[in-house]
Image 1: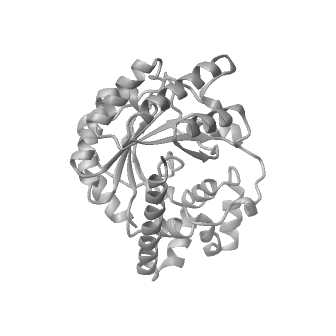
Image 2: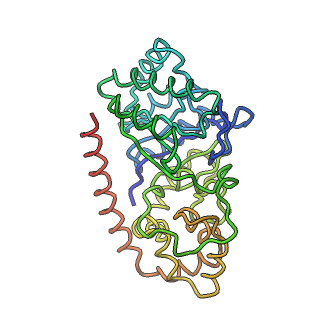
Image 3: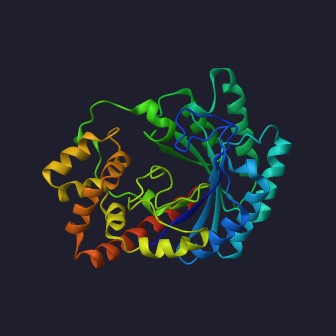
Amino acid sequence: MRYNTLGIHLTNACNLSCGHCITDSSPHARGDLTWPQIEAAVRSAAAHVDGVCITGGEALLRRELALRTIRLTRSLGLRASLVTNGFWARSRAEADAMVAELVDAGLDKLAVSFDRYHFTPKHRGVRAELLDTLLAAAAAAPDLELVVQYCGRGEDDAYRIAAQAAARHAARLETAAVLPFGRGRNLLLRREVDINEVPDGPCGVVGRPILTPEGDFYTCCGPARGAHAESPLRLPIDSAADVGGALARAEVDPIINTIHTHGPKAMLGMLSDVTRRRVSENLLDGSMCSLCRAITDDAEATDEVRTALSGNEVRLIALSAVLGVAQNKRKGEQSTCRR
């Protein structure tokens, strides 16, 4: 499997405390990556990824570190992206200045998170104005890919605001469901979940590894955070310089390749009846991510899947490569048509 993007989780700190935050970020959260860690991770991963995504927390609370990471990424011939909640777009002048710095550093893609969890009713007008101001400033940079990321069901005022702002400024709107991890667990945890609710199909997120401020390294950019110590989603490293080696090993891991090509539900049929029942009882909701964690956090389930996949490693790796090419082609077509 070819990894798409290395996530650099600059900081756990954020100016917001969103109810669905998968990383438990907030103004009170602590933990930052250092520049030596970032440089070592990006350099060692360069041969295994197509780009680097700078995220948090709120990455631009560590502005100089974010800009330095973008410059390093581009110097290595990789694509640079950044995720922000846009707190800094308090005026058009401030938004223009920040966008200019990001573009000058070499940023290729700017993703803005916006949904109902990002503002209270008291501040809805303020947050909507921030979004519009930021998008207007970013849209003036002709080569900057612009995305609005909405998390939720698409049935609220925040979705309407995000969709209208994205259309107004020729940004791409990406939607995702709230997941039962981090603080999102308090929103979605259910007592009983029907395994049949879990969707079939491949998972693209498993190809987006992330390095956290705690020094943990996961093959998945969000839901894997906090995975069991022996989980295949957790890639063991002794230091940030080991990131490239960890990716090299994970690229040929049959479980990760199966998740990428077929999805976690395909692994259910590889489990014994007893293990399948136990995994089903550990589902937090009906999402693909919940099933993936329920299987990969279960040592016996993981062993059973590895046994079932024995002898199919080469086929899975080849299939994953073909799927990766198709996904990258589709992504390129979306980028071309964006404006």
